Image 1 (tube, rainbow, N blue to C red):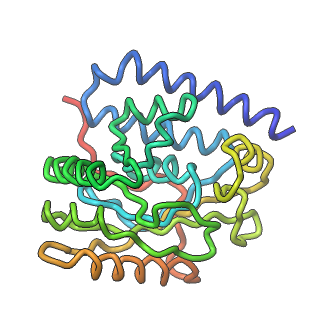
Image 2 (cartoon, rainbow, N blue to C red):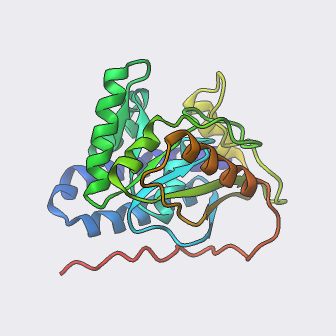
Length: 258
């Protein structure tokens, strides 16, 4: 029954989001687009039956790196801190979601092409130098969430070149008993629809978004930076205790429209 309610609800919600982007986004200020994106992302999580919890203070700008488990990660992060995302080029071809990503300043990365990777880095540097907040998943793929896969360092060079800090973020998915959940894991031969069905059928699913302290990386070596960020995220992934997470959205510091 949950699947029959949640999946059609999510589809209608995505269509509504597409209409908002098509009709209004180009007329709105960036601050307003960010507020709407944040509220819309949190709404999609609720429709899918996912409760979001937040720890830490999102950065106002700079590069954000996170472990990668699911396509849901994008909505969980946007619910905490609306940002530009660097995504694999295949996402641009996903029905509706790909169209939304193309219209909301997503940077797509072609795999296996050095020239394309160089163009992506240059574009990323421009975004960072302009004071934008950009999210990358340096694992380059998704995992089941039990560990952090090795980080690729290439895109981290953009933060070094732009002289901006890098903020690590830990993502966790938990079931209603507080145990790690693999329901949202988009791995292996699992299709997008299969993953959505598994999520929609789950009860009490929680995503935790934990923002760690930012790291200054100007003048650093990208491989050393990648190793340090990997250790920070891996250390916190399974850490217990700490302050209770917020269930309300963290303050973003966005200014109101004039």
